Structure formats: structure tokens, C-alpha cells
Length: 597
Image (cartoon, rainbow, N blue to C red; front, side, top):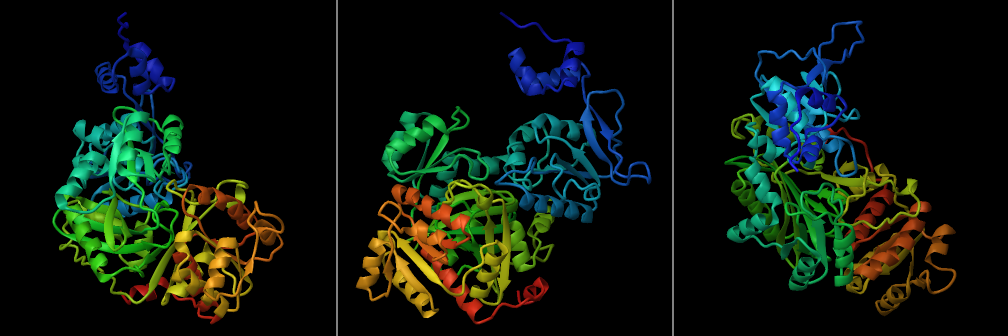
């Protein structure tokens, strides 16, 4: 039965009650754009009311607006040329202050270039929504309907969607289809980077290595793809934020469970399946491109293994364990991808390195959560530079040249986790982001910088005591022996679980054996609870090992014992403890480090 057309009075009442165009479209069996067209035809449009930020005591200098369906519109459009910047929306794990930082720098850049900067965001806990940040603030949801309402009132020269993370980025295509000019990378470039099939074709054309991958629209397709590329596989929905609903599946059973319970599959949202490179090193690159030139801000090396979300990994500038050949490949691939995607503005690329081969994992032609860290490390405001590039400037005009790692200090980003507030949650890190913040340590040497980052994150490293080792078979190698020897050289006692203890015995490392949780008492957890362990080196490998890790992790978090889950993190801890014992930590203004760039 054909549904009766809606009249202006009913439509206005629905809007006053808070129904969105999308909800009304669903009820009418039509599309959001058709409802929007009908609203405009019937003159059912919102007005904007002004919040008096000075409570009538003084004249408010920054208009602060919200939309409603009433009579009088209080948003007065000025005659200046305008730029609309879309914020990150509600704060959540995976997006927040890092993108807010970029939005604020975008506002500053627009103002410096003579534009009226208009901010659209709905999160009161941000600097971008402070009443004195932008020239004009619209406190609105980040939906197509609400953003278009602002655009139709203000008529800006363009909109910046790439500073607020994934939320505004999803609006790129519908906004462009509605005739809105996007400043920066086009929706086409964004879509190529997001669409796994198109992105794979681009990588093959450029002859850039990448892990094997596939897409699936059903459980059967997912099983077929995984059997073709081999386990373990990294699975995730397309267009996700903060690694939400990402998982590593080690066998067909866990993949089927994921597809049946975790995945939201639709024709336009397939599940992405990638070969997971276990035991690889991971790198992040942040760069600015103007369509021709590409300037790399920094190359960061993750201390944690590949497969852990970049927002949860400690990252080091400059990279400290990479060959010159691989470093050059990282730079070359970054330039090739930025030019091929016609990036104008910021681009973030994630790489993995295994067996001296560099693989591209992911490309994000937008602001990344590492932009503030990189900018503060190198003394170059990347987001502000990118905003000016989006507004038509060239990197040459701005006199911006590559840093190329020519600085004499080490900067380390460390994630902050809420585990101590949530008892009995899974503490092992994976592809889904768990951190709720990050801190930075900076110094002239690696050990001191890492020690500062751990102290800032609330995980101060011990300078004496006992270290527990429980490493997987792949990590029973010279590196583990050297780390254990270093700890003993620093005055620590070493204890180990059975397999690791036998390995240490065979390599002349003095140690004492301790039971795993299932082997008897007193076991690892008892030792931690009794204060007999000051640091833990526990490197899981494979599904079972990851589950075994949780018992140790819970006890360590509850009793504030620092731990490392990779050999590279353990090695970093050794260097930091050596610096702490030598009393090498000092305080210095960050600007002092920038002078060495």
C-alpha cells in the first residue's frame, strides 16, 4: 500500500519532536535526501538561536548557536569569506582531544589566512567548542542533515572534514554529492584509501608490498577468504573508528564466532580480512601534502608489536630499530601514496616491517591521533600547515621543508589506560583501541625519554628487585638472554616459568623457577600479590598464550607492577632503568629541544 504524502504541518510537528530526516524517511519508505527536498519545498527549515556566552553582562563577541524549529533566526551571516570546520563529535575511546587539537589549529590557520572560521561540533569537553576559539560556533550533531543546515545558512567557500577523525570523514561523500566544496583531499581519494578493493589495486599498481587481504559479505565468504590467505587474520568492519570491533582470529571457529556476533555486515559495509603479521615491527608516518610536494613530519616506530592499535602503542621519534634501506622505503612509499591519492593536507600511513620487508597496512588521508605528538616533538604545527595548504597555499610558499630526522633528541609517546578503574577487564592489548589518553617523554637519550614517558603514564619503572620472565618459544633467543643478562647486571633477580627457566639454564642465566597459575602454589599471581615481583616480561604468542596472559595482567594492574609484553618493550625498560639508576633525568623546556631540529 502506498504511503500517504506528509503535509507541512505534520512534518513541522515531527521535526519539533526531534525526528531526523533519516527517521522520517524510514517511516515514509523514502530517502533522506527526498525528505530534505520536501522540507525545503514546504519551507520546514530550522532556525538558529544564540547562546549568550556573557550572560547579558557584556556584549558576546563570539556567536554560539544551536538549531531548533521555531520562528526567528538569530544567526546573522556576515559578508566575510568563510570556512566551516567539522569537529570530532562526542568524545569516546578512539577519538577525542587529538582531533580537537587539529580542529583548533585549523581555526587558527583559517583566521590567519583572513577567513571567518566556523566550527561545527557537539562535544562540550573540547577546546574547539570554547566560545572564544572560533569566530562562530554551531553546537550541532555531526550528521549530514545538521551540517547541511549550517552550510545553507552560512554559505562557506568550503568545508574541512579531515581534522575531526572518522566521524566527519564519513560525511565527505554525501556533502560533495550535495554540491559542497570539500577543502583538502577529495572524497574520491578518501574512498580509495577506505575501500579495501580499490586500495589493493592501487598498491599493486604502485608495486608496494602489503599483507594479503580480502572482503566478505557473509560467514561463508569470510571463511573462504581466510583459508585462502592463511591464519591468523585481522578482521574488522569497514569505516571503523579506534579499531572498534577489530579482532585477531587464529582459526575458523573464532572467525565464524566473530562474523556471527561482532560484525555489522551490509552491502555497503563488508568485513575486511587481512593476513595478520605476527611478530612484526610497526611504524607510523605523519606527513603533509599539497598535491605536488610531500613533507614528512616524522616516522614513528612502535615499541609494541604489530597488531596492537596505534593509539595503544608507545611510539618513538626517530625510529631506533630499522635499516637505512627500510627507512628510505618508508619515505618513498609515503610520497608515492600521497601523490597517487592526490592528498591535500594531512596523511597518516601505518607500516609493518617483517624479515626486512616493509608492508603498507593502512592509509588515512586525514588528521591522525599522532599529529599533536609529532608536532610537539619536531616543533612544527602540522595541522596548521595542513589547513593553510587546504586553503590554497603551497608547501614551498610556507617555506616548509622535510625534517628528515635531523634532531638530537628522542621523543616517546606512551598510552594511558583505565585498567586500574575497571577490575577484571582484559588487559592484553590488541587491534581495538583501549587507551583513554597519552603522555610524552622527551630527552636527549632513549632511556631517559622512556623513563619519563612511563612515569607520566603512571607506570614508574623499578630500580631494584625481581623480574619475572615468561616468554613464548619464538622469543627464546639471544635477545631474551641479553635482556635477562642486562637486568642481572642492573642488580635484579630473575625468576621464570618452566619453559623459560629451562631456556635460561641452558644459556647460563641464573634464575629461579616459578609456577604458572595452573601448576600449583605459590604461583606467579601469588608472587605478584605478595610484592615479590617488581617487573614482568611476558610475551604471548598465539591465541592460547594471549588468554594465559590475562591472569598475569590482572594481578599486575591491581598491584601496580609494570610489565612488558614484547621484547622491544622489555629492552626499552632496561635502557630506562639504567638511566634512572645513573640519575640522568633532567628538566628542560620543550623549546630547547626544538632548537636542535
